[in-house]
Image 1 (tube, helix red, strand yellow):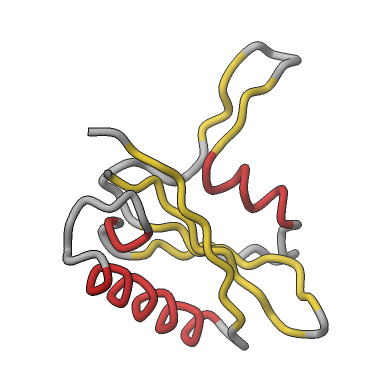
Image 2 (cartoon, rainbow, N blue to C red):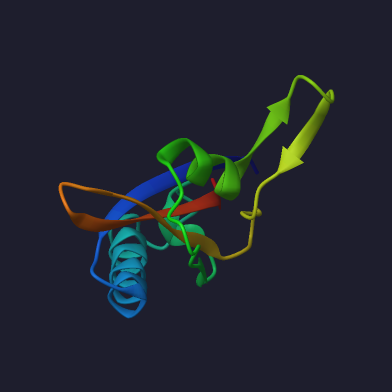
Length: 109
């Protein structure tokens, strides 16, 4: 089986609200996909939250979650998300004065 990356934006005022919305998004996704291997966020096993003192930019959050290739070192920089693991929830820079979070996972398909 393969895997795909799924990234969602959540608007929530605090960690607790973001975690609640993340759980709801994941449950809705499982329902919509018949609890099958869909390659979407519902395939993650729970949520792991990281709150940075200074919110990450969108690009920093993507790398934090999924990782990236580093041309300078010639090595892959690992992200926090792993296939079969929990979705990663991380705070990102606010937009229009609304607190934002990214929810991302490497999802079985």
